[in-house]
Length: 70
Image (spheres, helix red, strand yellow):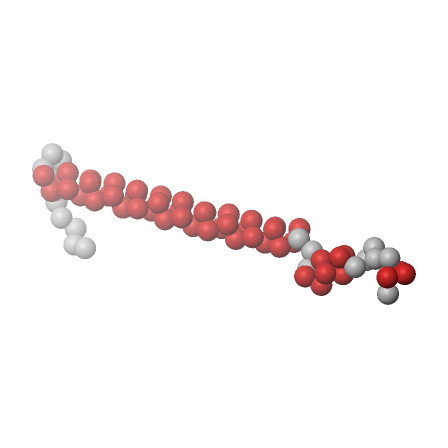
C-alpha cells in the first residue's frame, strides 16, 4: 500500500477504521477456532491414554474364568 495523507474526519478515514476493526474481529475468531481444535485434540489424546488397549480389554474378559470349564 502507498502512504496517503488522509484528513482526520474524512469518509476514507472512517472506511479504514472499519476495515481495521473487521480484521481484528476476524483474527479473534480464527484464534477461537484454533483453540477449539487444540482442546479437542488434547481431549482425544487424554481419552486414549485412559482407556486400555483392545488386547488388554479382551484379555480382561477371560482373566477370571473358571478353570473347570476348560
